[in-house]
Length: 172
Image 1 (cartoon, rainbow, N blue to C red):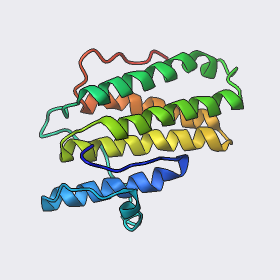
Image 2: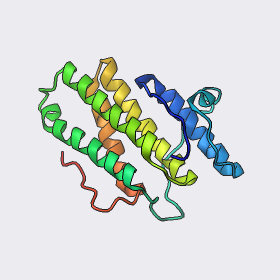
Image 3: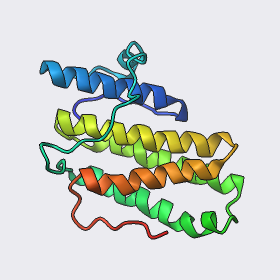
Image 4: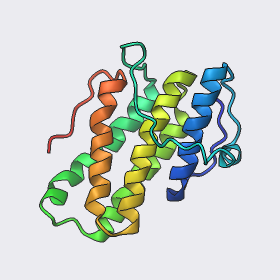
C-alpha cells in the first residue's frame, strides 16, 4: 500500500478502513494516488465502503505482491487451524478472541508491507473491511462464529479477485 503511515490499527478501525476504501476510490477516480495518514481518513468515514463490492480488473484478477501473498497465507493458516474446532462447537470465547488478535495482526502487517498499485489497493481495502469486520465480531462476543464465517467468506473470495499462485482454499 503506497506510502501510508498506518502506525497502529485496532479492531475499531472497520469504519476507518471503510473511509480508506472511499478515499482510494475517490483518488483513483481523480488520478490522485497519494494517501495521507490514518487521521486523514477520519474525515471521510461518512462515505464508507457500504455497497462497495470486489470487482475484477477489466475481467482479470488483480496482481498481488510478495508481502500480500505472505500475509494472506499466514492469515489463512491461522484460520484453517480453527475451522474444525469451530465447526465442532468446541471453540471457546477465549480462543475466538485469540484468533481475532492473530488475524488482526496479519491484517496490520499486510497493510504496512504490501505495495499494490492504487486500483488494486482499493480492491484490497474492500476485502480488508470484510476481514476486520469478522475480527470485530469475534472479539465483541455474541455470535462469534458469525465473525469466523465472515473471515472465511472473505478468504474464499480473495482468490477469485486476486492473482495468488498456489493459493489453497480452506476445506470446511
